[in-house]
Image (cartoon, rainbow over all chains, first blue to last red; front, side, top):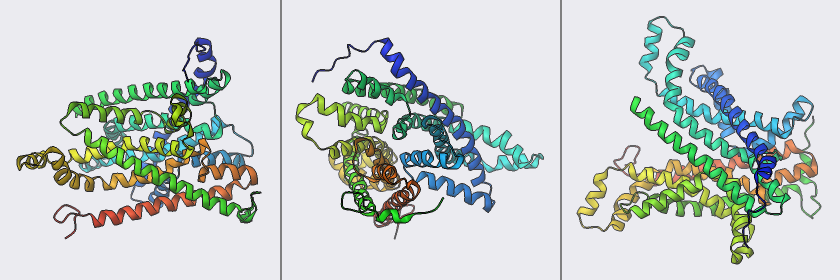
Length: 221
Length: 234
């Protein structure tokens, strides 16, 4: 079979693919910001040393990390309408799912980051009269965050790849955009190939950028 | 909302109950995962080893392989092997869907395993390699008798988590209608509308599958300990 990309022009790209791309990026950004915020809270809970905080946080992280993401997407798609009494739509449901799911992974990264800060610094904070919250906010978290920045970003690249799994509930993401365009022009093979190239170019360049950043951070430290 | 676990004893319309279907779906999940793991371990180890050799071309191949299969989403890779490759190469049109998924999942995971294996080899002191070469072993012999026996022991823990990931990732096979657990969950949820019961059962099966892998790996790790190393036996 011969590949032909003759049908492909800007109007095709803008009407099918850009819409999906925008959603994929939105989903990634929302889940990244929400996931890091929620994940940091969960990491702090796990490191708090108080049993009633440690246990729920550990259950949260370990449960989500042992279930396939597709199943989590399906679970939320099924449960959210049961809980709020009306369907939420695949796109919004995916945003909630990814935020909750990624928080489990980000929290493990943040936990490692917090643990990488020497405990003497916290003692020093207490010694000058800071509260626990002040110690965390002013001393530990800024350093943990900076030390872990490359890992957090690498996780975000994985997150961007994983957004393609919203396929399971039929949300219109980047992959779906390519698929719909392929169906419309009866050129599925070309469009799947283009989808692969697009994802590769985006993820590869981002991971190169992260590698540069890592080198920079390593020098500062 | 009330529970209705009887749903598993309903007939699917094909002469079997949903429970039977779920068990066979579990079998497919384990089969896909197992076959993919074999592909991933062999290809991943090979690529990881290539990346640590002194031969520039080998390093380049290993790096290229890893970057290629790491930077494309698994679902897209499955579509590549399922839709794109068979239409580009006429001879591959007869290949069953099962193999498309095993190759896709296997190669996807091989990129991650290649990273682990490379890191494991590089974690060894350089002197071991030089020592091997100095006593007259060839490079392949040095790998076989000096480097790899240690490197593989080092990477058992990360390989364990990759093996557990493979079971989770096999869920993506639903997209090409392999009748595994996630596909079963989606189909039977639609047919019976007892989504919660079915999802709970499927989630539980994923749990125990991953847990079983974890236990098996713990046994392997214990058996393979080297006396005198940190965490080693006596």
